[in-house]
Image 1: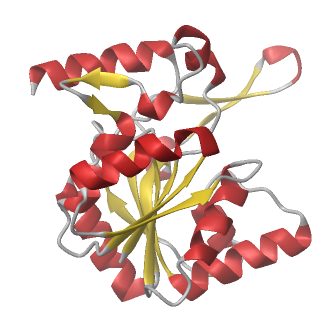
Image 2: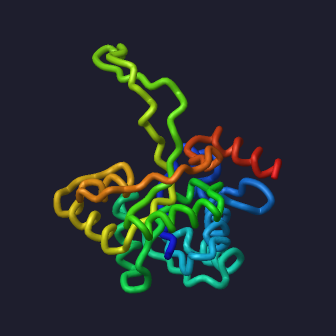
Length: 229
C-alpha cells in the first residue's frame, strides 16, 4: 500500500493568521505540523511502503525535509497539486502507477489517525477492493428547506461521518477518477467517485479523535491534544 496525501488545499482562513503558511505545515506542538504527524502515522503502519504528496510548489523543500525526518525508509514522492482536491488526487495516483496495488487517500489535515486504524482499513480494502474509515453520527440531523425552515428530522441510525484514510485498489480508484473526469463530475470525497462505479465501499469504524483541521479553533484544539499526549 502507498499513502496518497492531499496537501495542496488553500486553507485561506488559516493562511491569513499565519503569514500565508499552508495550514498543514503550521507547527502545532513539539515540532509537529499536521502533515508531519500524518507522514509519521503512515510510516508507523507496517503495510505502508510509500507516500506520495500533492503539494504547492512553494512547500516542496519543507515537505522533503519531513520525508527525511519521519519516513526515511519509505519510497516518497512529491507531485504538483491540482486546481482542487480531486484533481490533486488524480495527479498523485497517476504518478505512482505501477508501484502499488492499493492506495490510501488521506487528508493531510487529519493528523490524528493512528497507525492501527490505517492498517485496519487497508485490510478491509484488501478483502473488498474499497473501504473507508467513518464514525456513526451522534448529533440530531435536520434537513432544511426554503427560508431555513426544518423540513424533516433525519433518522441517524444509518448515518455515518466519513473520515480518511480511504483505501482502494489502484485500478478501481483510477477508473473512478477517469469516469468523473470524462463526465465533469466533482465529488466530495474519493469514496463517492468509487460509489458511482456501482462498487460497494466497506465502512470500518474510525476514532472520533481523527478530526479534520478546518478552522483556527481546530488548530487550538489540535495543540491541546498534542500537549496532553
